[in-house]
Length: 103
Image (cartoon, rainbow, N blue to C red; front, side, top):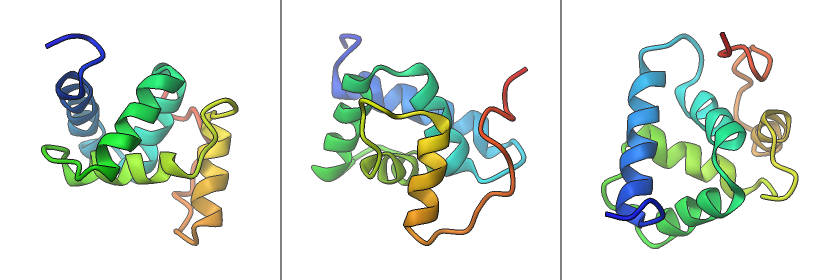
């Protein structure tokens, strides 16, 4: 399994999702924030494309995070733009500031 393979991206996204499911806040938003902060634009684009192709193997939280990333331009993506995309989608605000999970 290569670093850029869909299987590896699914594995990593699910691992990240597993961590954030046990943390305070909205897991999909926290996952999307993390992916925005630490994954390259091509990795995020590949995850969204994988979801669009069916998303087999993604946990529900990882899949929802990828849906949130779908509306965010990969060139300007940041935790703040993820929050704006969430607000634009009509989903409720998680009541926290981007980056609150740091540290």
